[in-house]
Length: 138
Image (cartoon, rainbow, N blue to C red; front, side):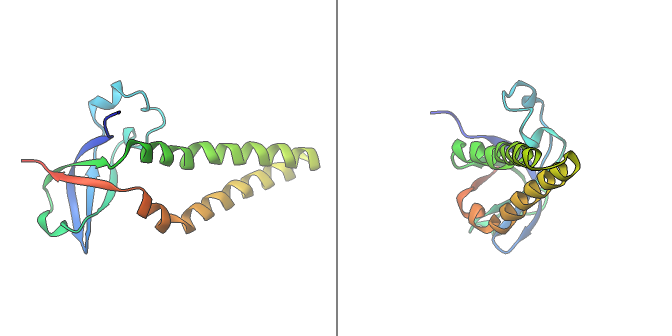
């Protein structure tokens, strides 16, 4: 079994049951096979980690954040990059066959916007499925 995706970060804020962790670009990302499609490689990101033990963390704590299952990372990449590309290509092909290039471009962009709007509306459902663990580093 592959090891989970892990990143070291700093606690930026703690709220009711949520720890906000700042993840900075790491030199280890250069060796990662998914570095081109992973959003973490592009500077700083804030990750929300829902945990019942949020009161054990304080601003400035050094922590390690990991996905519970590696498959969650793959699912995130598929939902964020692969599916929108497929939606874009299918909408472009269908609209190009049906009409002019300008109309096809507008329909294609609208289809991708609708996909991301649906993804946004379903964020609570995905939030329950994509879970992180957080460990305080000594």
